Amino acid sequence: MKTTEEKKYTFRGNTYPCCASLTMGIIGGKWKTVILYHLMNETLRYNELRKSMPTVTERTLSLQLKALEEDGLIERKVFTAKPPLKVEYSLTEFGKTLLPLIQIIADWGVVVADKYSK
Amino acid sequence: MKTTEEKKYTFRGNTYPCCASLTMGIIGGKWKTVILYHLMNETLRYNELRKSMPTVTERTLSLQLKALEEDGLIERKVFTAKPPLKVEYSLTEFGKTLLPLIQIIADWGVVVADKYSK
DNA sequence: GCAATAACGGTCAAAAAGGATAGTATAAAT
DNA sequence: ATTTATACTATCCTTTTTGACCGTTATTGC
Image 1 (cartoon, rainbow over the protein chains, first blue to last red):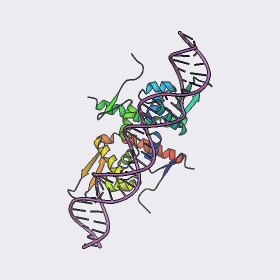
Image 2 (tube, rainbow over the protein chains, first blue to last red; image 1 turned 45 degrees about the vertical axis):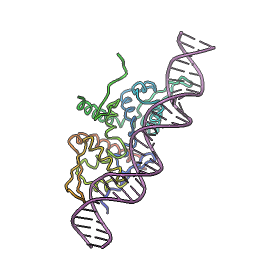
Image 3 (cartoon, rainbow over the protein chains, first blue to last red; image 1 turned 90 degrees about the vertical axis):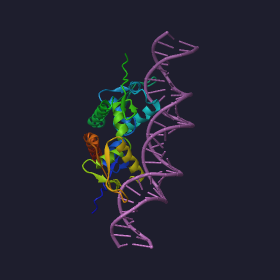
């Protein structure tokens, strides 16, 4: 019997070597947690999200929203059949299981920024 | 007065548009949380970390350890003057403020992997 | 009739992250 | 004398992520 861990963690076809890397594989990257943070307490339309995140490009926002949707964390609801579209994004039940995690990520960021501001 | 948030979050010369992105800027990427996870309860030598993370390359492990050290999350202690070196890595007090976050990241990964395994 | 609007998608390019492989210094073990 | 071990570093290369910029559709307001 070996002492080195061999356990594998799998989600939607991807395999990770550690439970922590699985989580980071899903919410990692520059923008995903920011999107989830803004959706914590409210449903938002595409342009509302854009205004909450002024420095993200439209393309990147689209890509990240699609990835989050494919992983089942957010839900995309379309309310009009023809342009201009009305589309709303919100957390799914599965996405809501991330709420404590997103909260603690946000809180730690606030504390650190406070501590090192001046 | 605008309603869109203009607050900025700064840490070690980098500015982030959101508290969540500050945190992710520090612990994001494929390997940092895995390293921190393995250092949660123990001090480890370089090769011990490697054995805990069999799929990371030496170069990447080095780079990530250095980045974590520069951000003040881990401490590097050298015990010998000449090769073969003995080097130990451990969490700093600042790094320990991440413990609840790392724990919840790990836990969420375990739950998700369990839920979707068969 | 013309501009504005919503929510994108496409193309191209740059930047960041990560991997493969080999090499270094020194000492202890064989 | 040669191998083994430690903790890296140096190149080089590939993959992934992100950004810049423009185009699209159909409706409403002027």
